Structures are given as structure tokens and as C-alpha cells.
Image (cartoon, rainbow, N blue to C red; front, side, top):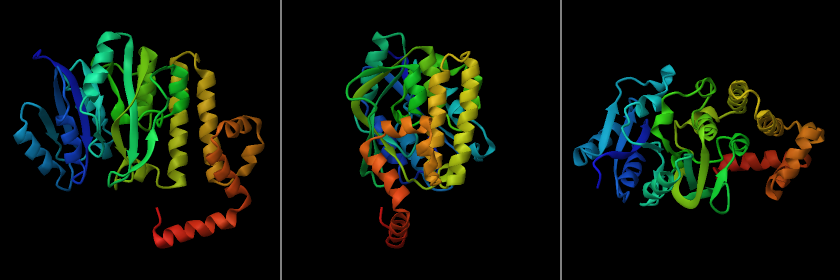
Length: 321
């Protein structure tokens, strides 16, 4: 086995004491023909996350390379993702946060095998399951039935939910000079996918090799998507990022960007129960493309609002998930 590091696993963690061991175990179980390193960045956790990482560090000192922050940098608007990957030595970077985990011991090997034989591939992703805090499967993140090369337009219109973040692998050398639109983004995974798509080909492997956990206390989804007001703020910030992207690409992807902005505005209007959106041509087209289940939900909200509110009250009262 070559002594050089092929993959740097970047793991950002904060107050993940219930989940960090599952993440670390899923990194350690990887079966590869190459060396890899595990870069852990603990952002001053106030629970036992750091203590658990130290136990693993002592057991695997040549594999696990942690940073233990004394103060939380994310709250100071420091890009902790870049801070962690700056110290990477691998040819490729693989992402996985401390509350997520991988489920296939050959995940890294499969992605590296493809990227090593396709030098034009700048982002390799795969299917994943969204799971709850207990690891129970909720739904799949499977953007295509079968392996596929995604276009820049598809990545833009697909948004941050197109690929699970902990499926992403990309060449480390592309990490150094990220454009302004990336730096203006409210999140990092979506603009990172766009940036990498602009640099080469995005290859999707249609195999479930990761679990992306939702509902974790303190997670980005639970904090930044916890109210309609915060969601609207996030959408507005995303529009700003996409405008920077438009300028960066000389408006080459203007149609895809407009489609994405229209979709985001459509979702906001439906959440606000502004069903006049269904009468506008640009939103009619969006509604037609929705799956039957989503269409039904919207129509029920529109024509049976009292029943929907009563159902929500019952769910809240009896804590139905």
C-alpha cells in the first residue's frame, strides 16, 4: 500500500455525543487499497463529544487527527469547513458531519476508483438515506435511478437537497480558490456542488452508501429551518448567492437560476397559504411537475384549511411524527 494519503475525511462536529461514535466507526470500517486520514474539527462542544473523540484518537493515533476548539468558531461566522480542509493532505476530500455516518465499508474505495480513472470528474456523489435521530430510515436521497453524470443546470436547479452532503468527494486542489458566490452563501454544500460542477463533471453512483441524519438538536436544519421567517431569510440569502453565481458565469446559467428562484418562491407562497401562486404561469409550470403526493398536499391545504389546522393541533398534542 502506498504510504501517501489518498483521501482526507473532513468531519465537523458540535455537541454530537450521541452520534459521533457512529460516524467515527463508519470511517474506521472503510476497506481501502490506499491510506486515508480522518480530520475531526470539534467546535468547542459543551457535551462529551470531545471526550469520545479523544478515546478514538488514543486508539487510532495514526488515523484520527482532531482539533479541539476552546471557543465556538461557527457562531463567529468562521468557515469551519474550510478551516478543517486546509490541513488536508489527501488527493481527495470526503465530507461527513459528526451526526451523519456511512453504511458501506467500500464507499471510499468505490468513489476513488471512479475518480482515479476519470480525471475530468470534480465531484463524485451517491445515494443516501435520510434517517431520524435514532437511525430509522425516513426517505431516500436518490436523484436518479441508475448512475449518471449531472449537468451544471441540474445541480443548480436541484438545490442543496439534490445530494446528501456526506456523499460528496472531490479533488483537494479545488478547495484552495473558491469563488465569491461560494463565500456569499448561507450554507456551504449547495454552492460547493455548483462550484465543483463548473470545474468538471459530477458523477452520481446509484448505490446507498450513507445515512444523513435529520432532527438533531442544534443542527442547521433544526435551527435555521425552524420557522417560516428563518426559511424566508435563507431563501433570500440563497437568491443573493445565485445572483453572484450569475455574474461569475456571465449569465450562462441564467435560466436554471431563474427556475431555482421561482421554485423557492413557490414553496414560500404555498407555506404562507398564498394559493394565488397557482394561477401564475411560472408557478403553474412548477405545480405540474410535482409528484402526485405533493400536488394532493397542496390542494388539501388550499381547499380544506380547517381540517389541516385541526390535524396539526392533534399531531402537536399527541406528539405524532
